[in-house]
Length: 236
Image (tube, rainbow, N blue to C red; front, side):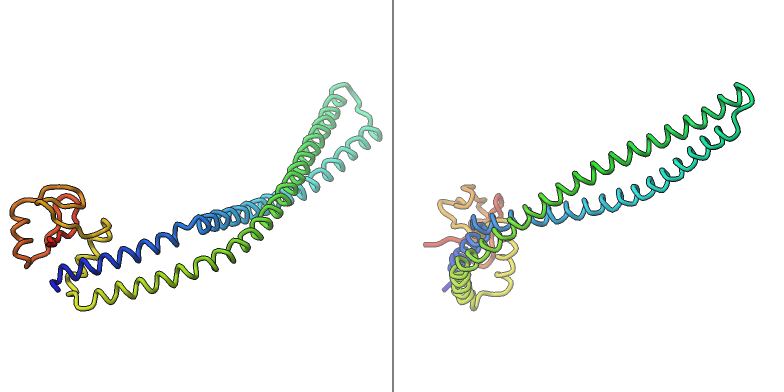
């Protein structure tokens, strides 16, 4: 058999194997598995981010609690001083009352922030609960589908291995340099070979120049379509 005809026979079996592999890769169940897996990973990342935010807010609440205690102690001290040593004049009274008012406003501000942080903490708790339940449910569904997929794909994988073996047997004796060209072209376009019919590449229906046609007739060189790049072969 001519080396180009042998390569053509190999390609036919190679493409069959690729088709089986694509069927495995594009299985609706496999795609659903991958989508469920991505959902679980996204939920895990979301849970981790919330945990980090909860930790930051917990530290902030501790800091506010300490600051609030200091402000309350300061206010108590001001009120005690006001009662023990009443201001001697109006200006002193205004000054002391301004300090008291400032301290009370600070306390109110801390209390408002504490309530806000507490609300956010409750919201985070609800979110984490929802995430845990959603992720757990998705994991159960993932495990169920994975079992079914493994059973379904087993036969397909065996079929693929058998077809790859057939293709490999067809490759025996094909020159390495020819196989190298074949694999290079295949990475760009598939199928990587096309018949020449009526002076045209049947892969892209483009007429080939006379120089390329002569090379194909002689059969000593690998000729690629100038338009699509496929390896051209002239079969009787």
